[in-house]
Image (cartoon, rainbow, N blue to C red):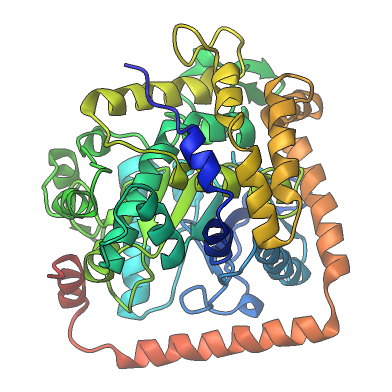
Length: 523
C-alpha cells in the first residue's frame, strides 16, 4: 500500500483566501527545545564535568536543563508568536551558557562526539536529592540498561507548535462540522488529524532537514557493512538521518506497542497500558541492585515518554503528573515534532528557513484531508521512513512505483504556494515563501541537501574535526552576543532555580519507594 500524500485539494486551496483563515493563523504559537552535548574544545571528548552551577538547577530552571546525560544540555524556550522569536530566545540561552562553559563547547551535530570506551563513563543527569530529582535520574538509569547509554547521547531539535481554537473551528467548518461547539473535541480531533498527515510525509522532513549521515568510530555499531570508512569517521552514503534510523531507539519491547494515532483515547490507552504491561527482558534486569533502583518498573515502558515517537501530542504537565494523564484530563495543547536533526551550519541547530518550512508543512498537514490510518498504511509508513533514513538521497529510492522520494516531495510542495503566502501575511515575514522555494531547489538537485553537505564535511576533514570547527565557530558568535545586563539576568534566574530545588528537597514526605509507586500508578 502507498501512504496518502497530504496535498491541498482545489477546494482547500480556495478556502485559504477567506479572511477567517488569515485571522485564525495569527493565533499560532511556537517553541523550541534544542539538545547539545558539552565537549572538550580540544579533543571533542564528552565532558565529564557536572552541570555548571552558573546555569542553575537542571531540575527547576525554566529554560536550561539536561536531557539524558549530565553532559547533554537542553535549552527550552518559552512560547512565542513566531518561529523567529523562538530562535532569538534560543540563541540568547545558548549565548549565556557558552559564556560559562570555559574550555567546553556545545557539540553541533546530532550524532555524538568522542565517546568513552565504557557506557558507564557516560554520566547520568543529576537533579539533586529530592524524590522528583531522584526519579528523573532513575528513569535515565533504566534507559541505559534497556538501550545502552551511547544511544542516549544522540541529540536533536524539538519543534513545538500549536494553533488556537479559531483555526480548528475554521478547519472543522470546511468539513461541515461548524455546529459542533465542543472546543476540546474539535481541537483534539484536529491535532490527531495533523499527526496522521505528518507521519505520511515524515520521510520528506528527513530528506529536507536530515543532517546525520556520519558518525565517529567511538559510537559502537553492529551494522558495520552499511558504512564506508574515512579515517575514524563512518559514512552511510546517501543517508539523511542516522539519528532517526534503527541506530536510535529500537527494541522488541517498543515494537510491541501498536500505537493508534486515529483518536486521543486509543492513543492514551495504548501508552498507559504499556507502562503497566510486564516485559520479560526488563523483569530479568530486576528492579533494584546495590545502588538502588535500576529502572522505575519492569514494564514495556517506564513512563510514556520512553516511547520514541517522531511526533507527540503534548499538554503542559502539573507537578509530578504523567504525560498521558495530562492529555486525558485536559486534551492536546500542542504538537512536539521530534524528527529534526541538529543542523551543524546553524548556530541554533535549526535555521530560520528550516523553521519556516516546518511551520508550512505542519500547517499543510493540519489543513489537508486526513483519513484514519489503516494497519496496512502504518506498515507502509514505517517502511518509507526506514528507507529514507538510510538511503533517502539515492536516486533509486522510490516513494512508490511511479515516483522517487524527490518527485513525491515536489508533488506535496506544488500545492503550498497559497498557504505560504497566507502564513507570511499572518506572521509579517517572507520566510515561508522563501522556505518553499529553497525546498524545491534542493529536491530538484540544484542545491545540496543538508545531509549532502554534512557528508562531504565529514569525509574531509572528518566527523570530529568538522564538529569541533563548527562548535568553535558558533561559540565565538555566541560569546559576542552576550552583554553584562543579559548575563546578570540569566544569573538571577539560575540562582532562583537553585533555591527552588532546595525548597522541593525540603518538602518530601514518606519514602522514595512510595513516591515511585504513586507516580507510576496515577489514576
